[in-house]
Length: 312
Image 1: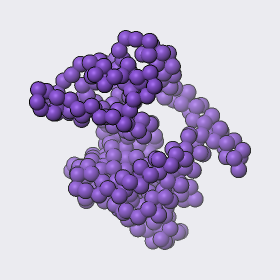
Image 2: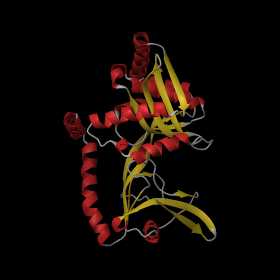
Image 3: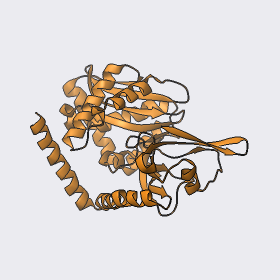
Image 4: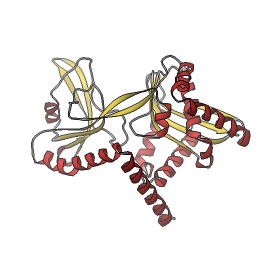
């Protein structure tokens, strides 16, 4: 990891965190994990993006979650929605919005919550806990989800597990790791780990115990999390880029993140273009077409089942 410090005369006006890979290829720190990428800079700051990457010794800077409004952003970069839950007017106002726009989802989720408690036991919700045991339970659920859906298991990499553990240990007014879990009869059912500032909770790793899948525990949990988050001063929950049904049901609006690259003319940038850009455009085409997306998702889940059999 490297951090470029940007000056305007004697004044520091920005920081640019990045990783430098072979051939001068630059990427965001922890690329593949980060949902908000780019410069940390003073308001109104402007810079030539190509000059920036040149001064950093980069031929290319590639990103997939560049925050809207960044000086690195141009019209040619692809924009993607990042759904949010707006809690600035409180949880009750949010539920009123849900009733208006996703009334069936809201009513069904409450009904399933009552049914879960009738059939499994009393429910409780622990918010902003710091114990490692429930965190490891959550990560195990997430590993199972990655494997079932044919995705690579991020938590097979020890450094990612250690990163999440360290972030959970950080608890300050301006930044903290936030772990919350829903229990039924003292048994964990669903949970989430994310990061917060004073006013924003960034969604990261939601998961649930598949034994309770028929009760929609993910939706039950998200409503519980939104209520407790609003009570603690959170104004926005950013659920992150990605087309997921639960996000469409719960969102009240969207932010934007961008995908693309900033490149200087040269052999390394040309090689990078050939290796990465056609793949990215193909993926974007699949994600934008419901039929292609459904086919690809089905193929990944089939692969996940075959992988589980072979590894078992």
